[in-house]
Image (cartoon, rainbow, N blue to C red; front, side, top):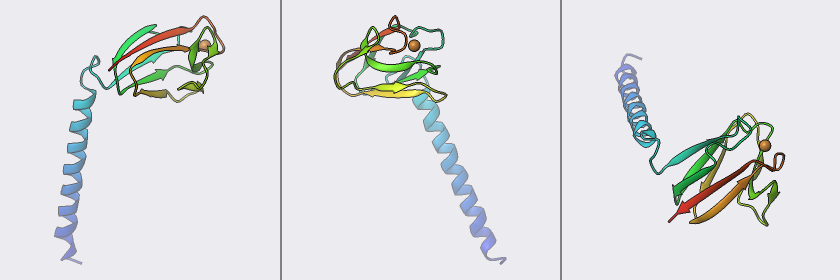
Length: 122
Ligand SMILES: [Cu+2]
């Protein structure tokens, strides 16, 4: 059993190193809020906040505070045909990735006055 100890320690150190590396990467990715990777839109006030958003193609938008709302591609409470997102909110954020350039209208089925315009730039 004594022989396995150095191996265990080594494994622990390697795991620690991996953990630290992973943490470092995460911090770098999330570093600046204006960066290309993601934006957050809050629904908690009964409006999409912000109500307009311009993002690079491939970005994700995280919708928070969506309980009691929907995140639906459409406008004035009505979905478009074949929406890229049409989800009822809940405790968990709704995360949408925009992989195609264009202008997307996002609305809430429950509150037609809730509207958001997302411009995805390629
Ligand atoms: Cu709503």
